[in-house]
Amino acid sequence: MWNNISGSIPREIGSITPLKLLLLNGNKLTGPLPEELGYLPNLNRLQIDENQISGPLPTSFANLTSIEALSSVSTFCEISDHLQLGTCSLIDNNNLSGNLPPEFSELPNLRILQLDNNNFNGTTIPASYSKMSKLVKLSLRNCSLQGPIPDLSRIP
Image 1 (cartoon, rainbow, N blue to C red):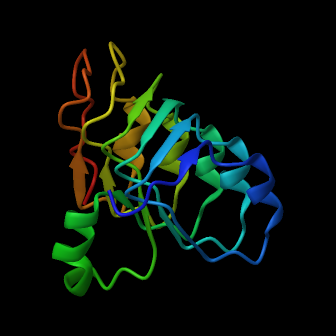
Image 2: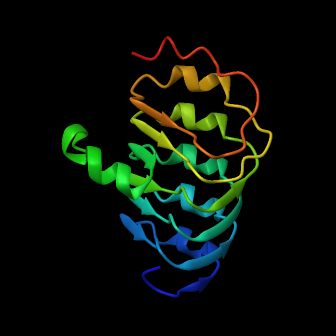
């Protein structure tokens, strides 16, 4: 924990359209991720890991077309020089639940999908993830997933 900011992320944050960076990691934030976060056209880095966020991942995150990574802080630090990532979304180590959004497969620049240490209990990996043409890392550790792994052989 770096701060003790608590409560939920306000929906009104979606009205700040020039927002490029939103760094809220290492706090005591709770509640669901507001759908409005996915409608910030200039957002290129979203960092909310290491909180107590719960609920499903908003499908509106499929609108974050500048995002290249949905991953953890340590992963971002380890590979940022190699991939020259300018944008990042960090959302692991929370208590997210529900289904993995198939819409993530529509993110054109997504290279890293890492949602470790969440609670997607009983959900499966969407078959549409096989269409992620730029994906170089898929990490879904400790998420209570079930079912088969889709055919990912089409990912270069």
